[in-house]
Amino acid sequence: MLIRRLHAVEKPDQPATLARPQTAISTAEPLLPLRKLPPLNALRSFEVAARCSSFTKAAAELLVTPAAVGQQVRQLEDFMGVKLFRRENRALVLTPAGEACLPGIREGFAQLAAAVSLAKPQNKAGRMTVSVAPSFAAKWLLPRLHDFELRHPEIDVHVDASMPIVDLRDGSIDVAIRYGSGQYPGLRVERLLGEEVIPVCSAALRDGERPLGRPQDLVEHTLLHDDSPDNDPSCPTWPMWLRAAGVRGVDGIRGPHFSQSSLVLEAAVLGRGVALAKATIAANDLAAGRVVRLFEMSVPLAFAYYLVYPESAGQSPKVTAFRQWLFEQVGRG
Image (cartoon, rainbow, N blue to C red; front, side, top):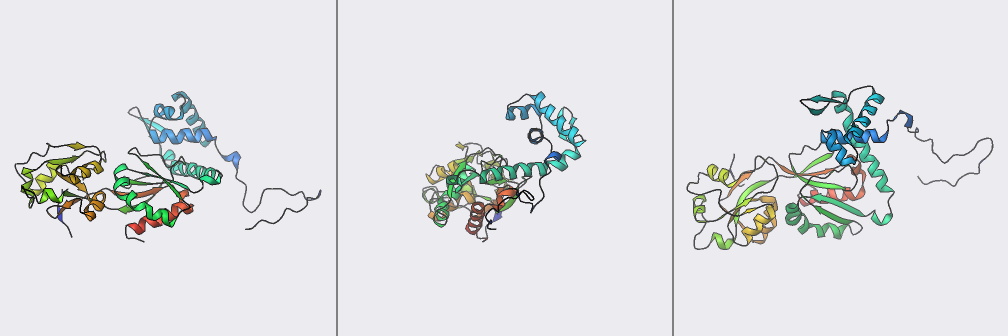
């Protein structure tokens, strides 16, 4: 682990004639060859089974039996003339043909969802739902969101703050900010912010009876632990950080544990101890002086924050406005 020092308008309809009857369908673009498409249920069953890697799990999501999912997939395979799945050690694995067609099918469902959303009542047209982890929502997004609302009063932002990763292809979420490796197949992904871990505490604790001037001084203080389920292998625990900093005589396991990064930071604000905080999450508290950075040390992380949305959502004016505003907030225009 590395610890580094900080540095066309339509024309009116023409009267119809017997010789040349008028139709309501424009011939500017070729008609969709519907007879060449497989059944929608078969496509949906394949997409869910591929995502779940299991007919049983797909059946639970689709509220049907596993046998029904298998039948729909076989119907699709018969239609296409290829095998889409194979079994490996009792696991369901995509064949090369399945891997080749899956991204296009997923994008097709995303475009269908986007098209349906355009037909919804106009009073919902200005609603934009953003999926984001609770700590990032509370500590980074919400303090800045009022600026976006002032600039775009026509857009009602709905913040869906939850840890589970949502399916962006079902149309219920317009855009997401995810913390991870950036690998989100079938979606448009843009890196928003990097992250690093820094030790922080309240100014009163740092300058109190047992001042914190160097890492070894931690032996006299309570350590606050972040147990948020980020699955980031590069994010250090206290034992990892202490070893890398060469600190001895400190029990890196003891101390309060919290399930969210924002809670760890709040405990540090209250003077409960010293936290290993994510710098992006702590930025507002640092700027306001509610916590202070210790030891001028940081650990850069492999994970980052990414703006994620379906390809079809890139055409949405509200998503475009939110994207531009976000990158302005992080100084990238």
